[in-house]
Structures are given as structure tokens and as C-alpha cells.
Image (cartoon, helix red, strand yellow):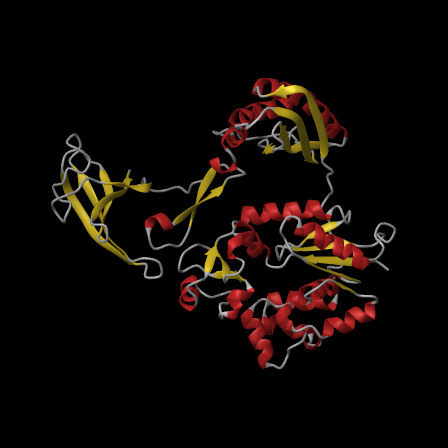
Length: 494
């Protein structure tokens, strides 16, 4: 009989936040969707639960319950990188891995056929937990006979669990409290009012009325729990990385000569990827230095490729940006590939005004030289202050912009980060003030003020915003900070 394992890296975003801030482990910590008082709490640790701070609360309300509360935002890109890392590590324990597309941190593994490698399923589960702890992530592993049975065993246990028979799994499943499985608080409260406190009672409900009474999410969970569909794994394709290492005959610190050594290694790795019908997605490398340390870095082309010239250009930029503390004694490289796709030529193809592929290659060069955080885009957020109404996120894929047709041209408001401090003014109102110097002329038109105040949860904020037009025609966006008693240039309208 097939055996399935479920690895539950509980509250993965929260674990990533605590891994970044290990000094917070003894404090109440929450993950919020945005680092603002109006942000919603998505995950909370046990210390936060002890202070009655729960997911779904506003960050400001949680701060009023505990002055020791710490919070942060975990970006989707960071969660995705962690899932990729976990998938690669779990491939050491099973060739078939399926990450959950519903809950980050949940993985299903094919545990069949591993008896000749591991002495028991208990040892297999323990080895998985030990391996993940080396990267400071903690997981519960359950081994069962069905997808939902292993999932429920991992979600409801404080330690690894192995079911010896399908009957044992079904009996355990019926006694699992629903709060361990159902994250929606409103759905849990509704079920509690009906006296449904275990998964067994929930499974016994007639399937015909689940969707109508409790919604689509409850209906999918009910089907999942009854074992209808969803038992066949849809594993990620395993792409084994290609590794090379080359000891140097003598210490080297010249980037051009290092690039020449990389070129010899790269051509061999690309040839092996081509034989496997793969293209290079990422090249990660380590420079082993004479002082015993290692310098780790990586380059990624705009799209998976087998073109060595593209990779060498990125490597030249990356190597020139690395500051070495000692000479290089050895080079290690790992090529990560993906399945190569055949691009078909379209019979009729519109010529784009912008070359997206060229832009992607340019961005790849910028990331190689300045790091992955050098290419970002602005994402709109909910915030009280102008500088809190957007956030910068990494840009990995560039799409052709499709702006809507407008009857008239729209004004664009530019925001300066940080705001520019203006010279002191003798007047409380900006009318007649030489804000931009004599060449721009005095302020001739003022629109405002618009008052922004609040911020009691951190520090008081009191600002008066104005749009002002100088004699030269420039529209500036300024504000007066009442706490600091200074004027600032927030932006400009063009």
C-alpha cells in the first residue's frame, strides 16, 4: 500500500521573520500584511496568543494589548524563495514532492519504497526534521495512507506521527479538533454553535448542503476530508543541479582571470544541461578564500538560456562588484536548470514598440552588478502618510504596459524619498515664498491646507500639506511639520 508523508513547516512566514530577528523569539511576534497600524495580523506566535493577540486583528489594536509586541512584513518573494529551498532539501528524502498551493509551508511526499534506505518511517521523519533545523526552520512530519490523513496528523500533532494502518489513521482523523485544521475563525465559530467540534462530526455532515450553508472553502475542505479526489500527487519536476569545483594552482584576485576560469567550467555545465534538454536558470558559485572564508553569490539570466556569453557578461559584472578579503584558492559552482521550451514562430506577429527581452537582459545585468534589490517596482499600499502609501518589491518579470485610453492627459505626482528639507520661512503660509530660489520666482498660488494628523501608536504626526505654484509655472507639493516646525518638499506635480 502506498504511503504518503506530510511535512508541515508551521507558520512559515512567522518562522522566516524570527529567523531574520532571532532576538524576538522570547517576545510576542506577529506577521502583518503591511507594516502600518491598520495592517492585519496574518500569523502570531505563542507569546502573542498568550496576550490574546490573534490573526485577523489590526496591528494597532494588538499594540495596545502589549508594548513588547514586535511585527514585520514577509514579502511573497521571500516566501516563494523559502518554498523553493525547502523543496530542494526535501528532494533528498523523496523523489516526488508537492508543495501546497493553499498553505505555504505544507508539503506532501511520496514515502513509498523508502524502507531499503531508512530503517523505519519514524527515522525518515526524524531525519527530515533534523535537516530542516540546520536552516533554522522547524517542521512536524506525519506519515499516513491518504493525503488528508497525513495532513491532519501533521497539523494536529506536537511531534512526528506515523500511522501503522489505514484504520488507525481514520480513527485518529475523526477525533482531530476542527480548530487545528480550519483557519477561518468565522467558520469555526459557526460550526461550534452547531456543536461540531471534531473533524468526524464535520465529515458526517451531508455534502449537498455544505457549499450553500458554509461557503466554497468549507465545501472543498469537506471533499478533501472525505477523500474525494486530491489523493494523487502532482509532484514538482526534479532538476538535479550540476556542480563543478576547480582548485586554483596559485592564489588569484584578478576578476578577469577568475572569469576565464569560470568560462571553462561554464561550457561544460551548459553542455550537460543541453544533453538533459534543460536550460540554465541560475548559476550559484562560491569563492573559497585564502583566509578560510567563502564568498557566495549567484547570477540569473533574464530567461533560462544556454548562451554562455549572456552568463559570462553577468559573471563579469558580479565579480567586479565583489570585495574579496583574501585571494581566491578554489572555485565551486552549481548550475540549476529548468526544462527548455521550444519557442514557436507565430505566423502573424505584431511588432512591439518595446523590446521586452532586451529590457529583461538589462535588468539581469543590473541585478548581477548591484544585487537583487536593485530592480524593484512600486506597489500601492494603504497608508496615512504619503511615504507609507507605496512599497518597493523585487521585479522579476517585465510585462508590456497596457495603459487605458484617456480622454485627457493626467498630471503625475512625483514623491521624493526622503522629503527635501526647505529653508526656514518667516511666514506660516507659503504665499510669496521663494521656495525654489529666485530663478523660479515666488509662490503665486496656494491650494490647501490639507491636514494629516495621528500616529499615536508610534509618535504624533501633524502636517499641513499645500500645493503651490511658483511664477515659473512649477507646481510643488510641500508640507509644514508642526512637531519639527519645519517645511519640507514632499514632491512635485508634472
